[in-house]
Each structure stands twice: as structure tokens, then as C-alpha cells.
Length: 421
Ligand SMILES: *[C@@H]1O[C@H](CO)[C@@H](O)[C@H](O)[C@H]1NC(C)=O
Ligand SMILES: *[C@@H]1O[C@H](CO)[C@@H](O)[C@H](O)[C@H]1NC(C)=O
Ligand SMILES: *[C@@H]1O[C@H](CO)[C@@H](O)[C@H](O)[C@H]1NC(C)=O
Ligand SMILES: *[C@@H]1O[C@H](CO)[C@@H](O)[C@H](O)[C@H]1NC(C)=O
Image (cartoon, rainbow, N blue to C red):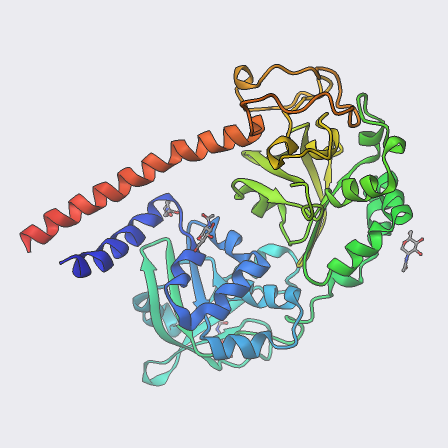
């Protein structure tokens, strides 16, 4: 009986999922024949763009066809191709076969980028003889050489996933310029981040960032005002190793545009997150506003300077101060538990800190974060975690019972169903 119920339960939970917005990654996880396509959706973050749409049709390619398309292409080129395969309308097999006059142009995600000249962001769907439904780019000279093969998933009338036989491309779609060729220094200077740019150059961190630009890099560049703000620690008091760490703390080793930051949960590892310290931070998002909370301070993500897969450059209003450097505890702590001291928010910034202050143990630091102080101030006994970690734990603990409840409800519903059958 259980062996019968388990797949049913799984199907039921998957069926429940669209009620709170669809997750194309999770849907395609159930289909190994599209795993290459699915992995590129994640790497290019086109999955986040798809999930944010209410009405969408994904034309997916089987692994062999997707691998052939992706071979020797830049990630930016592959992203263009995936966006052209995402139709901003709902097409199930019925609707495909019933297209009025047998042909139509439909808009795609690629059209929304603003980079699509003419009608190149549209896809031509045409019913051919023998019931074949063919697809082509709307760009002139494109051939109808991709066909509908089968339906993969239908969530009427929000999300449809259809398999097609071949990619839809046109000349130029895949030759997106690689972000790896852009000049970071010039870009940062133009965006009002001259101080940050010169620190990157003088510390040698620029080279580290440049070599990461092929694989994935997200930069949070503090603007020049951020370095002059009251309460900013004196960077000259840092050793050169500490300065390198601080600068690396302003970067992620992954491509994470603002739309993806919004959906992240928990703490994010930075390029400084190796070795002894943790050097991570959490994201607080409210509507379109995204802030980064280091545990010491909070900084708003101000603007996007460059969003070119796999590189994203964003500006932030404040320096990101890792608690490992500015939290006020000695760095060479004997126990790993003492590594994360209680956060000392700077009064100069109106940090929207959601943490319940009453839970925070007695703090000595009320003033702006100071450079590491002598070994006298270890974390208070009996509080092995930082307040931020505690808050995170409490949050996930609060979420867990809900999931259990839903699962329990699903099980009882299925049991009822089984008894009827
Ligand atoms: C499905 O589409 C309708 C209208 O198009 C919308 O109101 C609803 O929120 C959508 N549901 C999801 C899960 O996106
Ligand atoms: C979508 O599902 C994948 C797992 O299949 C998960 O890793 C990801 O976090 C989910 N995305 C969202 C926005 O919930
Ligand atoms: C789609 O392409 C076919 C073949 O090139 C063409 O005959 C048809 O007019 C196009 N459909 C639309 C709506 O442009
Ligand atoms: C990048 O831009 C900076 C400032 O505009 C300039 O000094 C530098 O020579 C440029 N580097 C390269 C490799 O073009």
C-alpha cells in the first residue's frame, strides 16, 4: 500500500506547488531528459525570469539538442537562446493546433530585454500539413525547422512546458559580447565608485575579480560617499591581508542579479568565505528594495551597473562590514563558536534590522564598529551563536511546522482517497 501511496503523495505535492507561483527548476527536476536545459536555466538565471511570469510557455529541448546548442557558446549567448524559447503566452497542444489562419507571431522573454532589434524577439508558430506544428524565429530568413514533439507539463492557463525538436535561432542571437572583455575599472569609475576601483587596483584584488569573470562574478561596489560616511572604520588600520578580505567580501563567486538576490534565503557565501571565518551575509528584500545585512551593518543595493551573464555589477550605499573583522571580537578565538560575536549596528544608519533586540546579549559596543579589540571581549558564555544566526534558526523553525502540516494534510487526503477507491 505504502509503495502505491508514496508516488501518489509526491504527485499530489507537486500538483499543490503552483498555488504559490511556479518553479520551473523543480518541475524539470522530474525529467532527466531535459537536465541539460534545466542546468542552463539555472546558470543563466532565466529560471527566475520564468518564475516571475504569470503566463508563460517554455519550449524545452532534449539533452542532445541542448548540448549541441550550448557547445562553444558564451553563457550570454545561451541566455539569449533560452529567452527566445520562453513564450509569454499559454500554449497547450490544443491551442497550438487551433491557431487562427494557421500561423501567428508570439512574443518571448528575449523581446523584454530591449536588445531585440525589429521583430527578432518574436517566434513564428505555423501549422504545417500533416498536423505538424513548426516554430521559427520571426527574424527574416529563418526556417521553420523546429517542431512540437510532446507536452511535458500543463498548468492551465499559467504555465505550459512543451518539448520541441530543435532550437529556435537566428544569425546573431548567440553572439552576445562576453562580459569578460569589459573593463571593470572604467565601469566602476563611471558608476561613481572611484575609491572602490582604486582600492581594488592597489590591493591586487582586481586581478582576482577579473579572472573570476569567466565563471561568474557579482560585485557590490560601495559608492564614493559610502567611504566618507560617518562611522566608517579607518581602512588604513587594516593589515593588507584584512583589506583584501574586506574587498573580497564585496563579491560573490556566482552570477546573482538583483532579481535572483530577492529570492535567496539564508546566508550567502562571498568570495571571502574561505578559510577560518564565515564572511557571509543575508539578504533582506521588501518589494523592489534589496538590502544586505552583514550582522554589523545593512546596505541597500542601489543600482545595477552591469548585468551581463555571468557578470553582474551592483552599487551599494554603504561598505559591507563583515562581523569577523568589525564585530569587535578577537579574531584568533579558540572555539569556532566564539568567532561570531553579537552584531553592533551603527546608529548612523537606519538599518531595517528585523532582529528582536531584546534577545541580543548585553553589548559593550554601541558606537560605530571599531577595529578588532584585545582579547577581553569574547562572546558571552551560554550564547554560542550570533544573534543573526539565532534569528535565522528561529525563522526556519517557524517554517518547518507549516511544511509538516501541509504534508500531513496531503497524507490524510490521500488516505481518504484510497479508502474510496
Ligand atoms: C495564473 O494566472 C492568473 C491570471 O492570468 C493569475 O491571476 C494567477 O495569479 C496566476 N497564478 C500563478 C500561480 O501565477
Ligand atoms: C525551485 O526549486 C529548486 C529545486 O528544484 C530549488 O533549489 C529552488 O530554490 C526553488 N526556487 C524557488 C524560488 O523556490
Ligand atoms: C511564419 O513563417 C512562415 C514561413 O516563413 C510565413 O509564411 C508566415 O507568414 C509567418 N507567419 C507570420 C504570422 O508572420
Ligand atoms: C581600463 O580603464 C581604466 C580607466 O578608464 C584605464 O586606465 C585602463 O587602462 C583600462 N584598462 C584596459 C586594459 O583597457
